[in-house]
Image (cartoon, rainbow, N blue to C red; front, top):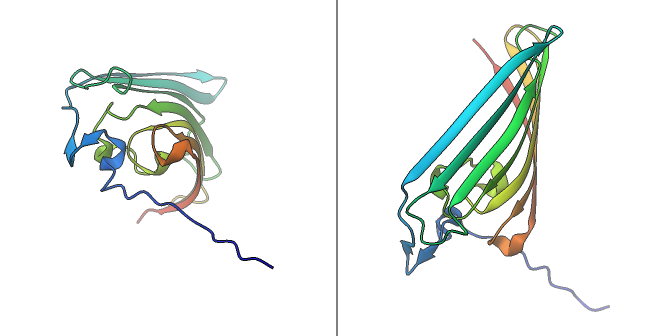
Length: 161
């Protein structure tokens, strides 16, 4: 039987500027950001719902094909009292130079910029001070990590004192 080698390629966020374009160890673009965001909420029956959106453009980006980020999503119900729950969803697309990658969501697409995809979240209030939750990221790298798919399931328990 022959041997097969397994090769895993890991991209260091530091050496990759967290997805931002770079040349010779320097950022290719400056970052002058214009951002718009909003949220609208209402009640359907007794259940609160909200939709939200965010749009950012880097007016100093060198490439117009890498200067934009956006997000659209919604929330159903509110995790407030014991026995209550909340579901969140958003879809986002963050191009390479839309924002400074080091400050972008560290869970989405492995952190940084150059990614797009879905985020699903669910929280349940177990008791007054204990709220477990699950978040699932179904993303794709864009322009880095060979445009690979990225999946992350994250479990959290918030305990209040």
